Length: 565
Image (cartoon, rainbow, N blue to C red):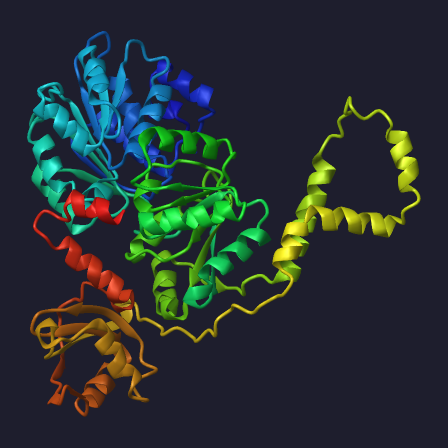
């Protein structure tokens, strides 16, 4: 295994890495650092969240940057304030012994006049969000004409958030001879378009399979009725007395509501979403990293940039609209060689996604029943007793008669004393769980989906204009007993026709059976085709809604985005 020293980094950088305890590079660092050190070519690096991308681009740039000048040489663009702050802090740590290297962070939610003063004092590296960077460019404060390196970090996230126009404007201000380093978890069509437009003869490196799940993360799910979701969450939290994690919700309104309900029920939780002020976000994150808050209730957007290496759990209160986002969520735990658990609370309607998520991450989902009062009490008591073993007994100045107290307690049976101790400690749980109501929903086996390698694409003569939907395809399969057992693959809905994959060895059978089926009184024409469907049918309405939302020429507007998140 190579060390950072083997990669050719200078002594100043090695000293900062020694302070941080970094010795061996991660796979993405081992590939990217020598490339950036030895080449002026552009680089596209694909790697999942938590793989050490910041060091992969920062260290080789610091190794080459010209010090002892106020000239701006590096611009790093990232999607959110949280990630911007995290990148800034990491770069400052990496450049601790690199003489006269000035780093600045610019992002929304903070006074722009203070950021302008900071930039006018001079900075060699600027980390910023696209909106604030463009604002400073338009004010003639931030000048990128001498830039030597442009870094696009989490490029897919920036484009998903609707920053394409901002990126276009910013990149057009940079010199042609710059080196562009694009880091992304996925290579979507929009990311590829940015790469084609602003990068030249780029080298591409990829670490692992796209969307593959983190090796140290296990995946569990519970199935309840929609109205029992919050009760299921409380039972899960009560059964996990040492939980330290992130609870993901879909929208900022739901995030705030769930956080308020949890706090009202005395859980150690705080909300993190787009309406939280920057000063409050900083306070919350500081407390969360110190474990003064043990559960962060967050939207996907607000959680980007949160870099905490020892989370025990990620909890999906709702599944994300995009299946790929699940990988980003679950990757928040199981970092730094530690194990983690990704927990999902499903309703029966979500069950159709299980096989698809399993195929995407390459791991099984384990079904579990929501813990009942017996399991909750046992876990809480075991944790309490373990904490007593670990605690040092300290003398209390106000109590100097422990011998007398011990003598009095001898009058009470040992068994009764233990009962009194446990009942007093857990009386809040005893009161809440006086009954053990059943909230687990009936679980039906999810439909299995066929992968691309074993799939044949079929084309039928109905599309969006005829009111044909993804659920229509499932309905046609489910209402025919012979079709019901056939695995379905990816689905695409076109204006005048639709495509869907089926098991190759049963494609002819499907064609024969569909010829006897009618849609709205009209016969279905069906045939094999070489066209490839673009997304998986199990995504349902959420995926279709997301795709139509993103099909605008420049992506979703930031105003629309803020309303939702």
